[in-house]
Length: 263
Image (cartoon, rainbow, N blue to C red):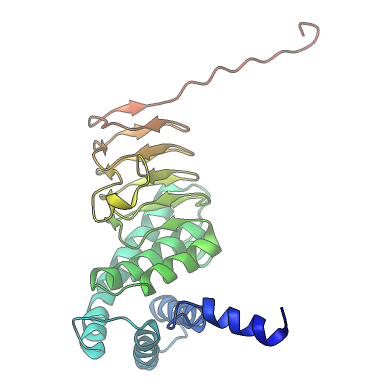
């Protein structure tokens, strides 16, 4: 096949006329600007809000999405929620400081904790998801996923004072519901019992009630699965049915240690 034919075939097979990969980079720039606007002492809030509006409008144009509201109305509604989002994020940071003995200051949490960063980007993306904006919220949380190893779908509903410790490998599905004062450790999955396109728009992921702690590598599956308040889920537990309030669930592995001269 000659060069011209190859070019012709490549163009013929490019099926997405609006697929502009600059959208990913611009979304990441927008995400960074949002984060700095909320937290960085030296970032001028008023100036950045104007910059963010321009970035937002450009993203909406590039995403080629049909929306029920004009861009300026969507942006106005989103900005009005930013103080509440920041209030929630400050509670998340305080929860980390209170729960993690390795944390020495709020400054350390804002600057160095991947779990906090993943929660922050999730909360900023979730509000766009609620507004019905497609693609951009997912690109935002995927950006955080790439940086932290935490995969939180922007559709998940997460309450106040959420704590993710160590962060890496945490997966929280689109229809998961997490109430207040929940603590999650590395490797935890809040997922679906099985994957099928027919389950779209249905409750596929579990509900975690207030004051639950879920330790490392626990897997909790299913839209009907509810973990009752004040429960503790031990590491490596595999759960596909509801757990009553005030429960302790744990997995007991069989460990054998052989030492010489008994080997």
